[in-house]
Image (cartoon, rainbow, N blue to C red):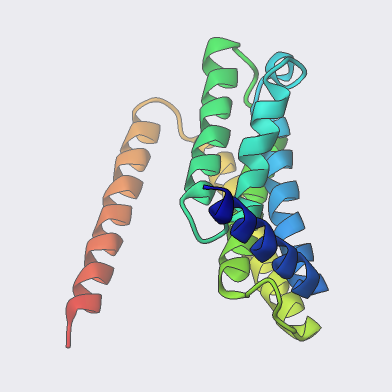
Length: 187
């Protein structure tokens, strides 16, 4: 038992000594993005309560293990907090909050994907990280613009037209998913 613990401590010391700056900054960005998402999504009364430490631990966990299921767990906790805040606590659904939660979740997920392929001791060219972040920024900007446009259109559609548009959008999403799955199975 003690040998196992001593071995882990030695491996941790070696990892800390060999770590390089950019992979550590990426992992810090993961924790920061997910923690900010928690702050925006969860009810303020719970964020400022004794649950704050637990939420912070859940948010920071993917920074230490970006390859595991921690990213999915953290995203589910953020979404759970959003649902809790907007249903149980009857918080108003504001556009800035929707865009902030989506942006922070995507940024955390994208940084975790990059950190998952970079060892903690990798020597990484800064261009790799900046081009990755630029692509992620373009996706975030495009998604935000499409969200605002879609919400503007739904304000004009009332009653049955809104339900019809929702069903058509859902059918299109399922159709594209099936088409992509079929194309990926082709030799």
